[in-house]
Length: 409
Image (cartoon, rainbow, N blue to C red; front, side, top):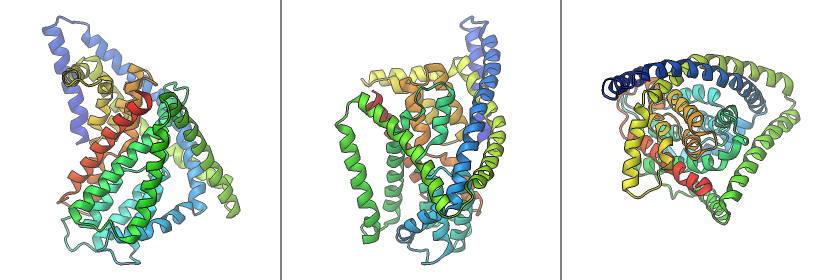
């Protein structure tokens, strides 16, 4: 799928450039495309410089959190909820512990730890699956919640904004939190509807009601604030949460006799290796997106959508953020490239760039998650997993657009 998407960018760009040359007489279009390739390759390296530092720093602190037992504590706290949501999984089965560990790691931004744990959880669920090729209800719920990706600390989004010169990289903290909550809620409700899950179970309600009330009260508080105050509050809470968690990791680690410096260095080394391996993917996707933009194909498509939006009588400022939303279900690297290109073209704190950043942080890459998690256990029939995951993705995108109009509109 990724091969076809990447090749498609170049083919569409080539067709658009030929049309501009042969019909529009624009002979300079090819020079602009070649120049864009080299400019995007340079931008990829510039992004990587900050990426090395950010991943090295953050994975160092997260390794302290792992060794301090914070992730395990979160897993125990979430365990009773997943026992109710997955009734076919017997109490005490290893899958429950792995599932809760996976979600706890995702919530803290521990992507590198979350994926291998998630694969182990999917394999444990497959042991309970009566079919070798058809996804079970538990597997579908687990996958959809992974695809909706409730991430409390979108550190990579902050990093990309910082690299592009944002004076306050954490400005989108609250919008992302609200949008990702929306996608996760819709994902859960859609699966619950399809599987007839008993969400009114006392244990489930004990988790959902306080969370819903807290979120509702928080949104009611936000509704009383002006747009300027909302942006200021998002900045304060984003920075306070990030630094507060760092201090929490350090203090708990020290109290539990973790050698915090050595743990930090261990995690930091992993962050350096992860960042190093991302450069080829970043170069590939940014160059493809750059060619697409330089050929005029991307602008042509967006202009068509913009005219439809204008015809409907809506504001069109969000349209320039749609490329990120369109490719996000298929490729995380392509969506990341679209985000960076939007920030570069429109300005890092422009409305389209803020919407694109919020969309990028609101959900996961749906088809990638489907391919990796179901492919690992040989599942061929996903049943309602694809529909529910895409519905959650759509909710995240619409939520991101709506929240950004609320905060920055």
